[in-house]
Amino acid sequence: MGRTIAIANQKGGVGKTTTAINLSSSLAAKGKKVLLIDADPQGNATSGFGVEKNDLENTVYELLLSECSINECILSEVIPGVSIVPSNVNLAATEIELIGVDKKEFILKNEIDWVKDKFDFIMIDCPPSLNLLTINAMTTADSVLVPIQCEFYALEGLSQLIHTVNLVKERLNPDLDMEGVVFTMYDSRTNLSMQVVENVKNNLNQNVYSTLIPRNIRLAEAPSYGMPINMYDPKSAGAEAYMLLADEVIGRKVV
Image (cartoon, rainbow, N blue to C red; front, side, top):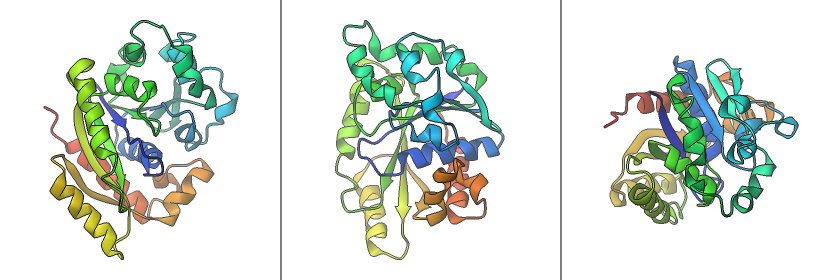
């Protein structure tokens, strides 16, 4: 039975999609079979694997509207070990389209249940907001992984996200857990980065991954080439960090 992890933070620009792409790819490089679901209308996780997002017939949007099955919208093995359920800008209309639909919070879960046994990990890249798409991701997931940028306002909004996770756990998905927090855009040259890490560790009663994802130019370049970092520049600091994070995720004890 695959582990399903929603990668969520309602703040944009925190390295959420970067983590979704590169953690998925790193898990695959370690022999795991991964399905990445792009639940963000920006479709950056889709294009980050070199998929032309605007030419697709079936995406998460069609899936949520019951216009196709999960098997019809999976792009198999976009790189070895990673398959994708893609997304594009059409997904932005989902909230309106699903008004009045019964049990709309569970549409994604009901579809994923058909394929869950085929994968070791199912990763869901959530949009940078706490909307119906994020709720669908959280009702589907076993846990939520939260990327946090090493900046002054890192903790702002995090309590709201944890509150949402707890609400979903209470009302929709009693099995949902906090996977943990991963720090992104870490710059060892600044005191601020170190202070943010310490601040979060001291104020947050959550699992905090010891791997710190560095601020890395190669990591920023990789998506424009449609490649994850471990294929674009496997010797870069960013690639090494995501491989270490993959080890931590694989090794995490699931209760």
